[in-house]
Length: 454
Image (cartoon, rainbow, N blue to C red):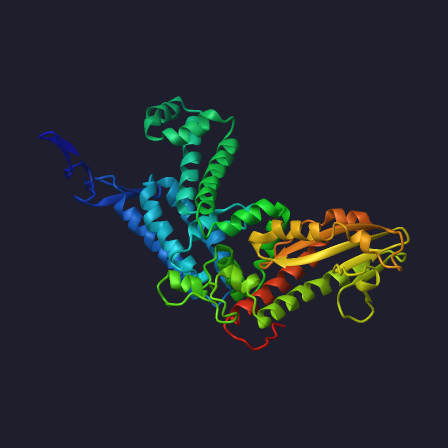
């Protein structure tokens, strides 16, 4: 190129060797060197178009596969992202373009796979860490930032003085990324700091939402991280309809009457089962409806989990321990034998003590209040011991399991009765049972007939 009248313009060079003229790149065209496209305007428009088309083709191929939603999501995070890394590291694409083109394209397909409404914060929920019910799919904007960090690190730490000088001369254009490198001892530490900042940004946005952020925030504050991670892992192996249901319920974007009213799809937001005039919200459908049929469904869900807990305890208790339960089942002694006017769900008795465990299946936003209510209810249960219970010391415990299957900690209970912690397999079975029951309850939210979700 030449500078003419104060402006750089492209010219056609005329270079020859003995054999003849050397072919030149035509005007307004581009050439590729070491896999990178070079054009006169340096705007990378053709590279952008090629990358966008590449992503579209990969997403469309994935979309047409007859596989579960979870598998499509895994292909996106583990394969498609890897196929895009080279270009994101090779070119300096504007982050705005990456977000508005590549991320927007991914979100469109993910929203279809997850059956999410347009208003759902798919981007934020997908980038959350494991301890926050993640899908664990970084956005291309986040991936691009990490590629930029890696590239800047190699320039800064190069053995060549000329390359290091290039890094220094271009630092004014990469202030944020270079600040991470300068303020941390290693590229690993800088990368962790960048990831933490990206996740915190997504978390702050999601938790700040009046509707969609309520349940994730409550879960993160009341459920142990390892149990949240187990929940996220467990639903990955459930059928797609349960996986999508759990994700939509987590954000409270299920098409209940209240949401349909908010989206201007219906005129009446009230629940048709209880006819109380209360809005048919996510919480109302899954745990708060007062109709007889809904209460029956809640009880069935509760008793299915109770049966699982009893089956586990029977298999691990010592021979000197006897299990009582508030459940009509063969070979189970009634807990009413131990207490007058009180019926905790489970009681484990030995010669010296009685340990009770009260199960509550509640909405995610009610985990703490349900626990406090049950603890207060049973704090004086020892005063109501029956003749059979005698003077044995009574210890009262609770377990809360949310309508989506998040499980509270009962380590104090298991330690007191001398058994190992609740096994992972049992927790996975409980998560699956609760989600199946809650999905059946939701699916029949307008149906007054009795259901069988088995």
